[in-house]
Image 1 (cartoon, one colour):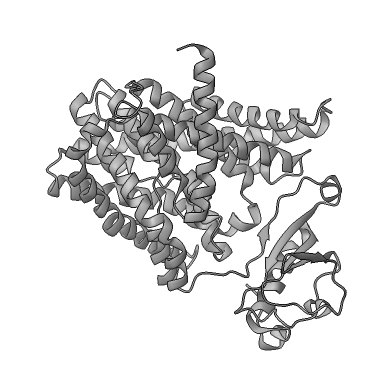
Image 2 (cartoon, rainbow, N blue to C red):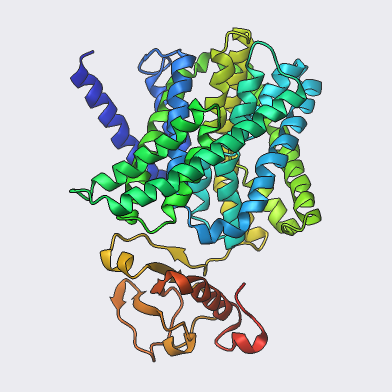
Length: 501
């Protein structure tokens, strides 16, 4: 086929995928499943496209994952994840180790896999997927700490799992001590590179006046890959480097920050679409029947044993070290919200591409991981809102970021928040002046029954009102706490000792 035909086919796939995002949002299904479906339709059992190159798939997959992590770092609000970072780090290290061990021991005993293959399966399945977590959980009204833990964990745990899979895929498996040293070394180097590139990049962007505003988002993404490639060349973790670099840049006052975030989101969506479609083409549906039973068994072990156990052990560590206390409700939700997506499938291409792993075994592992991702994402993703509500963790009145490209807001170092008044909230009936927001915060607009108006001090809030609040970054936390407090206890929340924490 000519280049024009490939361009037409690629454009058609992207447009269909964009429509699928809307369908997924409406139905509650993770969009990754629809993208995988497109790939299967285009593949050998559908339109007949042949693609069975695990080496190329691995390289494309790792680059796509780096782009997705960059978007995750740029769009993560530091104030939301700051308190969750220590807990997330425990989950991404201790939790990953426990998950690998639990899955490896279980599949070794139940599926009779040799220890090396069993450890590979455990390592491949240990990481939660940033794309799946960001796309599903950011639509859920969760308490800030819980949402922050999940977001930060998905950003951090890719690095140790990639390192573990790489080590287990080498010709000679290292000793446990050597493996732990290698993991620690790569994580330290990756963190150092990421935290070095970000400040230098911000300094340059603030002082170099580019002639076109559209160059700033490109420069930010280029800086992100400077961190990624630099860390890899120094034998460090590129994933950790790019996530930390973009997390710092995304939360700094740099020129055109909002447009940089928007550009990163668009590129990340394109990377997700291309990645999942490619993985769908790579899979061979004719080989799936042999992988269904072992895949379902391994997935059940992961969801019912390994993930809950890793959360329980991590929660014990955080409690004993004084980092944080996780309630049983939070632990239950964290256990169920460990979504898997592209990351395990991409990681499964590493042993497949390695000459040290027998090809039949590696291909079977890839097929089993594919089954696990499809079945358990379909099971877990749509049920997360129900589980959050069942556990009493849903907070529909939580303030949310509303990204707007606005020069005046940037100049004022201000943020724009959106707050909805749900039926159970005690915000209903409260007048604007009774909110008693800080002087540097203002309710600028109310959306009510499809109409908008500028409120006065005596405007009384009603159920389903949506408030747009402009606040300086300095008093944002105060505004969020005040809105939560009134939502819980009413306008006299202060008299009841409710501080909105």
